[in-house]
Length: 173
Image 1 (tube, rainbow, N blue to C red):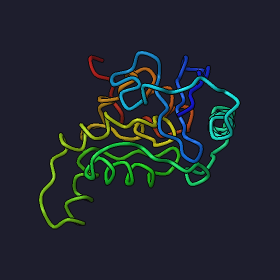
Image 2: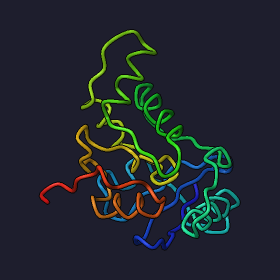
Image 3: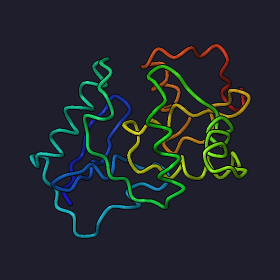
């Protein structure tokens, strides 16, 4: 596995890739920071997949809308988490869904009830932040909760994507 640090407008991120896949993008100090990073990773910002990820992030922060499918993603997690992350990848730029929306979508697929809290746990463990857009998930009443890199980062990313923030609430405000 190859790693590199990436300086984004929000701070420093660690990128982790194999020769063929993106495995992680973590904000420095976020909850679960580098939780799935291989212990024998090599710092190499010139590794081809690392460079491709940096280019994608550069385009995103420059205001473009690079497609998630441009990068081969391989997040490590349970089948349930994978299913949640797959749904996250379908949320368009500048839009958001609630944890409950995602739970209902999963329940419809599996024909069994799902809890918004379980979805929140999977969203919070997303190892490829920004690219797998966990920042596009909000609480049922529009509350900006549950982002591993913090509420300020979540709000910044949604503003960056020109999301309609009128129905959102910052906890404690």
